Image (cartoon, rainbow, N blue to C red; front, side, top):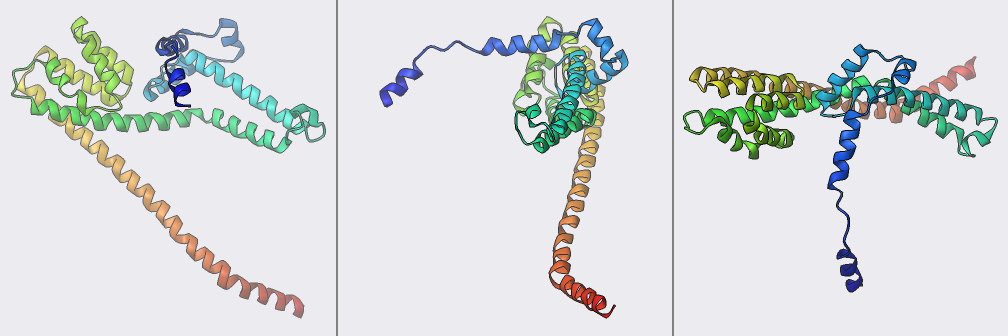
Length: 276
């Protein structure tokens, strides 16, 4: 078995590194035909709104394609739900699968697709919080290198190890720097797509043009803003946890009522029924 295992391990396998790039490029460049765009009732305003949400979530997908596929899936979910309802009398419509399972699955899919804007907004908010934390750390390190004679690119290179969720975008910023620093910063802001990334990019652009001490004072103000935002997020999480703990604390009280009080109430109800 060991020989067979190592034999299979040495079988050459075609690399898959380029397939993901083709898929990403297809998702970014594919657009719906004009006639289908009109039939689905899409408008430029709706597509632009979804584009902003997708960019904020870090999803590099054509908003035109996303919204069109979402509406078609909603129509498909309605058809599946209707087939499940008809299968109550004609099981052949769902290939003899339990109709209630089909209807519940279609309803869940329809609800998820209908409220996708709220889901994307929550994902965007979570991603923005992670970006704020990492930009906060990077800004602190740039302040640490304030008196250094290194150029801005070298200082940013030393901050790569402090990144995690934005490391890919940050590394692309450094790679594109010498091809055009201003364009690299613009691409960095567009890839992240959050207000905090935009303000951080503007600060970097100001430092790139002139590394004056006043710009580092501006960075200190931005750091304070990032800190306040993180404190607000921390307080909201504490409030949510406190509400959850309050609900969980009420469960034993309800259980006590059910175990000890309900039999007495039921017995009293029976006595009143017997009197009547």
